[in-house]
Image (cartoon, rainbow, N blue to C red):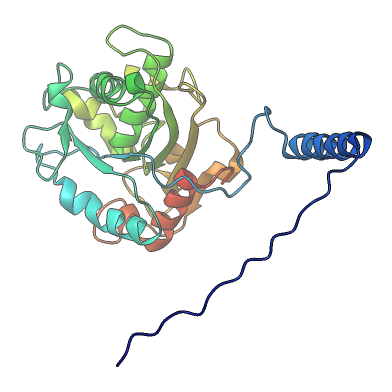
Length: 288
């Protein structure tokens, strides 16, 4: 086949006759006025506020497990189902599974490296270590995080925000934590039988413990830029009552109580799709 020679191209040139100077100034003025009007309508220089429902699913989410009698909690079995569902619901940021026992498995971070934490340390001591980790790794670098705390892990998270906000000894400087969700956390102490705990970590969860009293000096502690807490409990939880799990001074819409979600087992908070979706919305959606 012979190559095809393209047809000659013609170009039409239009010669524009210059407008009179007065006409050009008028059009230039109109253009300037139009630009100023557009700038004003866009609100350039003003603060843009995210609308209700705007999604923030790229922040790091720290996941903190609860109390273990045997000091051997698996972060994998505790949180991986929840992580998988949240990924399917659009979360693209890193999930960081946080532990504090010597026998922890499947955790990304162990707070024993960030403070004087032992297996019997109170949750308040663990809060101090968490604050040091969050401040050094994220806040000092201008990065905001979200936190999900299960059971005692919720007390650890709330305690870290509170202790750092008042610069109590052992805590870091204030933290940049935007959202916290607690799942079955004993904000007012664990069930009545926890009163039989006379020493160690378990005793720091009793309703009458000094650590619980300290925590409730501030019903809604705030980090740098503000922190939204959502507290989730269940009437089917035999370890932490719904009233204790939601014992914070937060808006009613952020106090969520389910009827039959158990504290432990495969159908607990992290294994319940409805609870996980609600927790995800609390982390990701403005005003939810």
